[in-house]
Structure formats: C-alpha cells, structure tokens
Image (tube, rainbow, N blue to C red; front, side, top):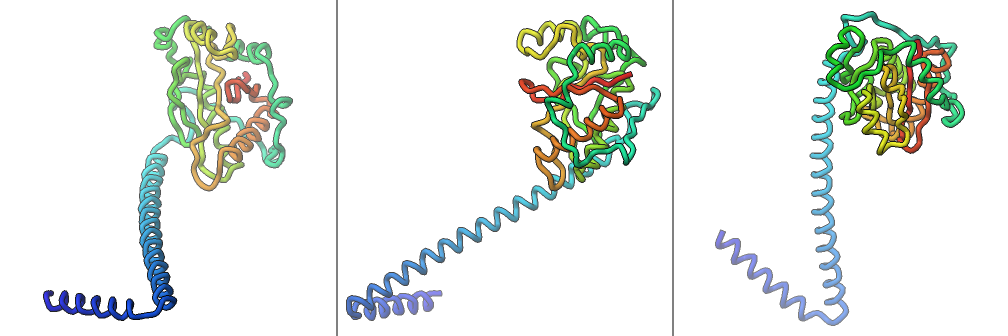
Length: 272
C-alpha cells in the first residue's frame, strides 16, 4: 500500500508540472474537460442512487401489494351472513350499459320523499340510540370489508343494514369491478343512523334530513372521490364505472340513487 501511495503521489506531481507548462488555451480546455468529467461523475452517482431508491420502492410496493392480495383472498366474496336469506340482484347482459355514462344530476335525482317511502316498506323501525342495535338480531346484518367494498371508519352511523340492502352491496361491487376490469373496491362512508345520530349530524351536515332514510337500515352512502384502488385504474374511471353499475341497478328497479355534491357521495336506498 505504501508503494502504491508513493507512485500515485509522484504521478500527481508529474501531471501537475505538465499541466502548468501548457499554454493558456490548452490548459483551460483541459480544466473545462475535468470539470465536465467531475459533473458527469456526480450526475452518474446521483442517477445510480435514484435507480437504487426506485428499485427499493417498487420492491416494497410489490411486497405490500402481495400481502394485501393475501389478505383479500381471506375476505368473503359472497353475501353478508350465512344465517339469513340471501337476495340477489342480477343485471342481464342485454340490460347493461357499460358505455352509457349516466347524467349524474338527471339520472340520480331521487329525492328523500321517494327514497323514504321505499325505506319505510323495507326497513326496520327507527332506533332511538345505538344501544338498541343489540336487540335487532335477525333484522340487521353487520357490514364488514369484503373483496367488493370497504367500510370506512364511521362516526355518525353504525355498519348495519337489512339483509336485502347488505346483499345489494355485494352485487353492486361485483358489477363495478366487471366494468372497471380490476379488483378495486368502493368505500362506504355512512350506513345506519339512530335518532340520536341524526340529531347530532343535522347541526353540521345540511344533507342530513331529520326524517332520514338512513334510520331504516336500507340506505348507505358511497364516496365517489375516493376508492380502494387495485390494478391499472384511477379515481375518475372508478367513479364512472360505479355510476354505470348504479345506473343499471336502478334501471332494474333495485334501488333509488341521489347524487350528493356538498357531501361527495352517491346516496343509495335499496327498494323492497
């Protein structure tokens, strides 16, 4: 090592002498070339670091997505409960409109009075508070994440629906995925509300009607600006495909849909 160091030192001294013996222009040309070489080296090191970080990122993403896929395989892909009657909501191929993008304000404009009439016929008697949920065995099923939808953390409602409405969510999610071509899931932001929930919510949310269809276990809200994205798609495409699925289900007479703007969601009531 000492001999190598001495040789490098002598070579450096020799190059320095040769450099300063050059005339003005050759000396500065060499200086510029050295600076360019140094910058190129720094750029190369930076790019190599960027590639390394990017490779690590994609490795972590693949591992993370793989883990999520394993979790998804354990999620139920059918209906909400095995202890109640299952309802199915088929949309025949000749009744589907995958290329028909609904007009949100015109096609999804079923007001609260129309939805309320359906909710009263299909749903439960409104509950005063959440403690009464425990007495609704058999009348309500508790929602949980499936491979077709995900329930967001709920603050002003509880994740319960009548069996017919719970099963509707499964077929709606399946149809949206067929239109979208991925396993992306929609997000449920509001479900069953008690009278106490409505009173608290009406003071902060103008869309929360006093006589709300949410009180009957037939109604839920689905966000249209956020999704649990899987595969090669994006929020705008998922919103369109969810709208197409809702439009088809509504055309079949399965539900009423209201497009909410101030609270960005599709307000859906399942029909009896």
